[in-house]
Length: 204
Image (cartoon, rainbow, N blue to C red):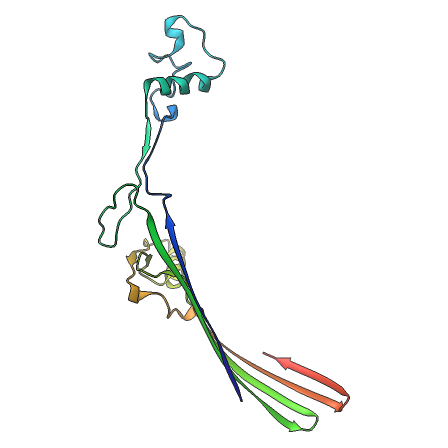
């Protein structure tokens, strides 16, 4: 009888500044009227007797820069687990985890001198990745069940419910989803009409 296993534990700590700052830029597409040249706006060069530029961009963007106009601002805000806003420029730290577990057992039975049967069983668990420190929002419902219910509602002409999310604590990491667990068996035989001509067979 043989027993074995395969256990994997991975931690992937990361630090990012990608969304730690707000972004401001001058873009005439957010202004009314859009842009300056060829619009009849007060800054249109035609209003002071000048020819319209061949390229609107080559006129509008320098004007934006000279006047210091910021027409588009995107605010990025990060929160801690108590929903407090972190100061601008604070790095976002995350630690992602991934684990998997496999165990197996197998045995061989020599039925005859020229026939050996091997059989075994393997159990595997592959949980989805998660954020180790609890910075993770996950669906509050089983998405497979939600999809099936949505299909039933569609067939009846009924709308669908929105998917609710909840914040997972460190203890609530997803490890028990049946979709990530498998149990597999295998049996094989090795027979030969003579000791010098083996003929293996297997199935699993």
